[in-house]
Amino acid sequence: MYGTEGGIDMALEFQSHIPILRPSIHARRANLTVKFQDLYGFTVEGNVDDVNVLNEVREKVRQQGRVWWALEASKGANWYLQTQISSTLKSSLTFSALGNAVTLKKLIRKGIPPVLRPKVWFSLSGAAKKKSTVPETYYNDLTKAVEGKVTPATLQIDHDLPRTFPGHPWLDTPEGHAALRRVLVVYSFRDSDVGYCQGLNYVAALLLLVMKTEEDAFWMLAVLLENVLVNDCYTNNLSGCHVEQRVFKDLLVKKCPRIAAHLEALEFDVSLVATEWFLCLFSKSLPSETTLRVWDVLFYEGATVLFHVALAIFKMKEEELLTAHHVGDVINILQKTTHQLFDPDELLTVAFDKIGSMTTTTISKQRKKQEPAVMAELDERLRRLNSLRADNK
Amino acid sequence: MATMGHNNLNAKLVLLGDMGAGKSSLVLRFVKGQFLEFQESTIGAAFFSQTLAVDDATVKFEIWDTAGQERYHSLAPMYYRGAAAAIIVYDITSTDSFTRAKKWVQELQKQGNPNMVMALAGNKADLEDKRKVTAEEARVYAEENSLFFVETSAKTAANVNDVFYEIAKRLPRAQPAQNPAGMVLVDRPAEGSRTASCCS
Image (cartoon, rainbow over all chains, first blue to last red; front, side, top):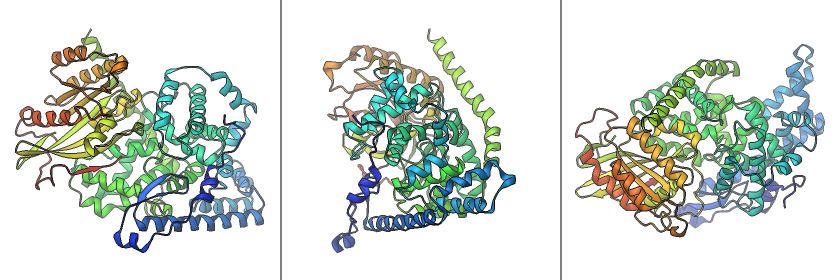
């Protein structure tokens, strides 16, 4: 059995074993679709250009690694932790801490090297702090305590294990299934309001691949659901998710008015595609390294980044979307775009430089504004369904 | 809504049913002719399109394959709003999934498009030895509720295309010629009868 203390070192293992692909001249000429493994072991399909982009991304990741190591050498290991003090003690802010905070924000938007991700995410997201408030043995104790228990959540988790990134060389193995099962089952007992929500399987799976240990993946999932994301995204009727979708629609009207007007004329509700983006945090739509670059920023800057990224996907394809005349065409454009975004910088540059600023405060206000409407809508639906049932008795 | 023009029909179709009943597998079988033992769980919904030739006309289905977990039901109206057809899927080896299917039928009868063509599909018909819902029980229920009923197997492909063809045949009759809501005019013929574009 895979122990909670042991490391799986998935990311590293994959990087060292995956050969750099050199597409042949024939493949180039034929513009063939080829299958290849990406940085985290996922099999993806693309053309030769995509393979080249992915090789460039690998090189950029290596360069970014050198930048991070150089900073550790000059500022000391864990230098990035000093920036956290600045948020609580603003008055006594030192120049070096402020400087570090600015450097760190920029640096994180350029990407955390996969090798450093576990450490940096764990500290900066607040997962380390969350873990430190409970006894050392919390995760192991809970794992043992819930072993063999059967609940609606565990049944649904079991059902989804082989359906979570099927074919992945580690996730889709008995070992991978067992690790993912424990993380999800233990979390379902930690928060019975959430229990298990489909979508979390993909999120937890990717966290396992990044964090290397099951216990760290568990704490990342906890901090994500309890602190980073808006409340109730995954509970009962997904009310938090409904709120986010309404906020997103308003933002699209403000930030991309031409697209919003065009899609409205087509009677295309953007939630049709964006719901999955927000619930899976893009893990089902974007290539893995691109998803994880989004998560780098998510864990440091908060859930606002999801709006930036979702808006950027629409913005990048503005002209093409404006020529679409059918709902199906719109969806095809968006899905093709997300699946092929192998270069994370292409997406993140648009997300942060072309969307304009959106502060957490503004977003929070918008959420507050939408909450009553969402609650009213969900209550109304429940009432209608209950009356249906009463009629039939 | 199903809309007509030059003998071509665009029809929005939604699949509803319990988690793991095989909604995505039915669509994958119909659109790509494939079957995967473990189909990725659907979050929100996945979109597919497929064009069929029925008699002299073509029907282009715009298919919304929805997530089955109960908490996702609050999202369902977004997908069945304006749909011309629905396939309600249950798993013949699970009575719970049949109960869930009946709830979907109720909801669509009250909240959906009144002219919606509805099919009830008892999937996983290849698992005869694990059967919990008899075909007779489902047939009686379907007749009472004027649904088209068939047992399917996405695994063996049994009756899968038939469900979609039967819906396609029933569409023009069920649909008034002019329908103001959700009209999409088709101004070009659909490309071929088996062109499929698929996204997951």
